[in-house]
Length: 50
Image 1 (cartoon, rainbow, N blue to C red):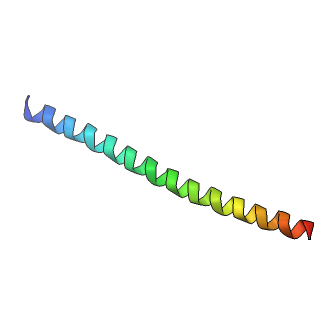
Image 2 (image 1 turned 180 degrees about the vertical axis):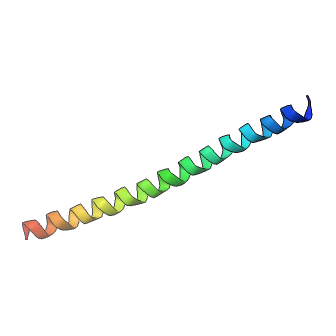
Image 3 (image 1 turned 45 degrees about the vertical axis):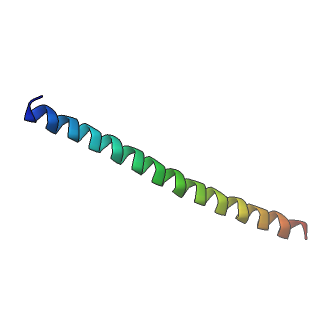
């Protein structure tokens, strides 16, 4: 392979890894946000019944 092909391959692999990393970060962020929302809704329902 030529140096240009190594450069392109490295670039594609870097973008792929950053995409996976960013996707996992967004998933964790969304999961935590959803859990907070569920807790908030449980508190509202509990207060509404009382």
